[in-house]
Every structure is written in C-alpha cells, then in structure tokens.
Image 1: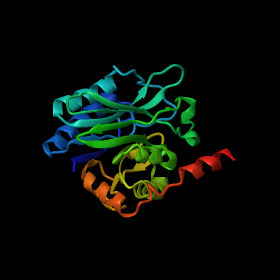
Image 2 (image 1 turned 30 degrees about the vertical axis):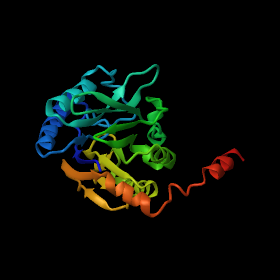
Image 3 (image 1 turned 180 degrees about the horizontal axis):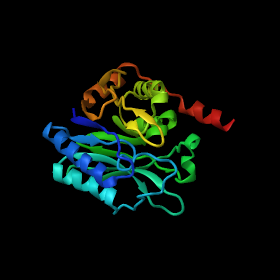
Image 4 (image 1 turned 90 degrees about the vertical axis):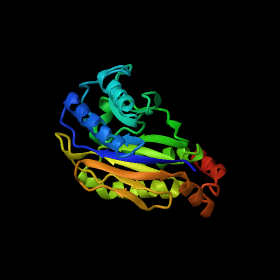
Length: 265
C-alpha cells in the first residue's frame, strides 16, 4: 500500500516580510528533503502572517509567493503545500497551492469557510470547490483553518475516497482545545488521516501556540508538535485507512437518503 513521509513545518511568521519568510521556507524544505520527507506543509499564509483584513502582498498565480513555493519544491525535490493571498475579481481569496516534487501544480484550493468573527469576509471572498488530488498513490484533500469546524466538507472528501486531509491553519492559543477535538473528530468519523500544520508565535492579530497535529484514521496521534518552531514528521500509510474502514463501517452505514430529506423539510 502507498506510503509517504510527511513533514510539518511549524513556523512563526516574520510579519509582512515575504522574502524573509520564504527564505526560511526554502531552508526548512532542504532539511526536510535531507530527512527523506516526501511532502512539506507550511501554515496558513506563512509568507506574510495571517491577517483577515490585509490586502498587502496579494498576487496572482504567477506572483512572488506561489512561484517561490514552486521553486522550493523543484529545487529540493519535495512536494510543497503553500498558501498566499490571491487576487480575484473584487475581493481576494485565501488560497492553498500544492506543488509536486518537480514543481508541477497538482491542486489549488481557496478557503470555503471564511472566519467572519475576525471579519475575514470583508477582504476575502469564499472559495466554492473542494480540492481532491493524488500524489504518490495517495488521495488527498485540502482545507484551511476555520474549515475544520464544518464537517460537510470532510464528509465530501471521505466520499471522494480521500485518505489524508492536509490542513493549514493560524489557530490561536485561546481555542487550542477545539483544534485538538476537531482534528480527532474529523479523522475518526471519516476514517482517514488529518494532518494539521499550525502557526506559532505572536502577531499583531493574535497569539499562536503551534501544537501541529497528525491523527490516524483510528484517532491516534502519530505526530504532535509543541509550541516551538521546527520540523515534525509522520508517515502516512494507506494500509491503516483500509484497516479502519474494514472494521467499523460507519462510512457505508451513512443514510444519505434521509439526510437529504431532512434538509428539505
């Protein structure tokens, strides 16, 4: 069964300094590649720091930040999940990009559920489509931070056959209990891996505690970071997805016919 070594790059952003943050990302990717990782994940808007009200450093697909993530992937022969503020008609989009180890763009995802308590909807428009792709024989799905609170997206990914969800976040210290509960819940109820990379450190927006986490299809922690910057590793092994789904058959026991009817009543 397909396997891949995943690297979580838990970073503290240098506020609004893309060049400095991308230099750090390149250095971390080199180290992860040297340690035989096949994929490296960076937190939400790690190139600038997450700011729900900022339009600074917004770019299109060919701008400095996404192109640098692509370059990092190609030069270090490691797949990269990055994030940037994407220009679109009207408001921006909070967008994730996944490049394979040759620098080819395999997936692009714009955050569907915007964090309205932080007024993210004032500067950003929501994405409308999930992102499903296959890399190294493993089917992945993408999501961003606040998406974690909305189980429908994760149910879709399970129905699409995803085996691992890659989650980028700037999840604050004040709600870390929710972070832990939601990641475990999404992994257990959908019987796949959930790999969450979080920001750490203090920014003008909030204070972050890291605690990046990779949870198995059976709800076990296979990687749990502390609050420090650093690289953390986990192996994604699809045989464990098959094992979980062959045990408790909760996915096949779903009653979609009833759920749809309830929403129409």
